[in-house]
Length: 156
Image 1: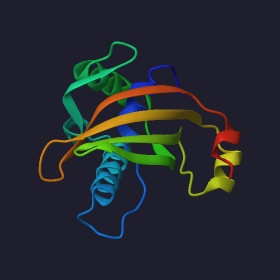
Image 2: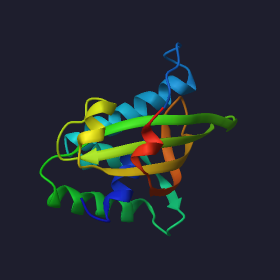
Image 3: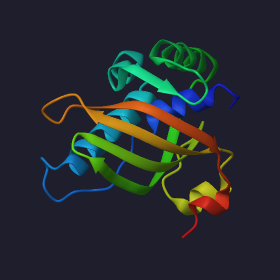
């Protein structure tokens, strides 16, 4: 996996904690993250694009179109994509806004659990995501910061 992974992982890393109420913001964000993971593993760029807000921007100057182009490039270079994720934080600083810290490992082979991650050759990232409710529980990523992570970051 090469340097262009970060924008792809940003899109994929839309992963959150569980909420007991399926209509709760936590559950809505979790559903968004699950959809992103499924779309990435299926190489479904159209679905991934819908999960990133039109006004997306990040600390590296990327906009939504740049992220989509990088994801497309990554799909061309990798036959398969498998993710392992951990949500470390999910908060709601104001109504209709969320912040999440997510760890994501990406590899060419499945990573079913932490034990497999220890043996996998994977790219590891930490994402600090900003999300907004576009209305009716339709959440999208509006911004992100990311950096490389270490295996130790994933350990309890």
